[in-house]
Image (tube, rainbow, N blue to C red; front, side, top):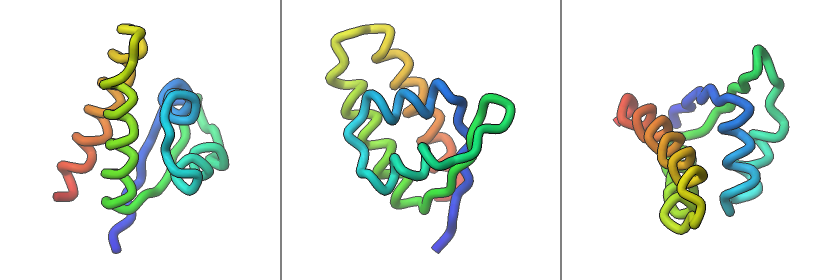
Length: 87
């Protein structure tokens, strides 16, 4: 099973933690990651990354705040672009 390293900004991490209903296992890794230069690096399998992207997309689709929707859409694009490299 291939593990994918995902580099996220603190703002991107906080978007996922505060605005999605991602599973605890996915969220806990974000919370436990060490912050270096205002970024974190976490590892997920391709299936987990796809699951995370689904949670982000769901929130973006239901966001009433357009600014939040735009941020979530951008994060979704980042995650799916990374996924595409491994497909």
